[in-house]
Image 1 (cartoon, helix red, strand yellow):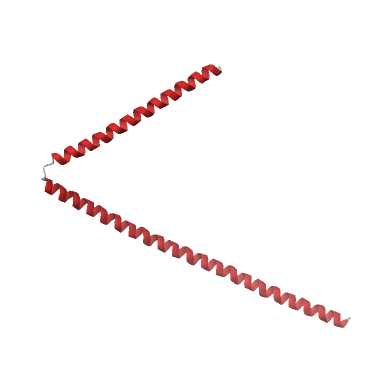
Image 2 (image 1 turned 90 degrees about the horizontal axis):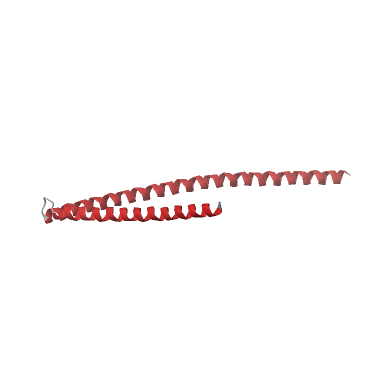
Length: 125
């Protein structure tokens, strides 16, 4: 059965490679078709070359402006999110620091009280 499995595995690998080759050829053909369609569309367009170039330039400028606007918006959102996160972390750390300071003060007070009590006990004894 090992030989049969090996033969089946080789057939599957060969079929997989063939499918990948076909997919690559289809993608290449589609890309060439799109490029040819774009070129023929520009060459046979009812507008003059000058109008077509003007239209393409306007579209490119509009796209550029849209991208710039979106980039500015994303940058501002990121800055706001960073600022909010920074404020939350600062508040959290301050609250933990306050708790720690209170705990240290309570501990110091407790030690002083216990020490005073021990001194009083020793002096009474």
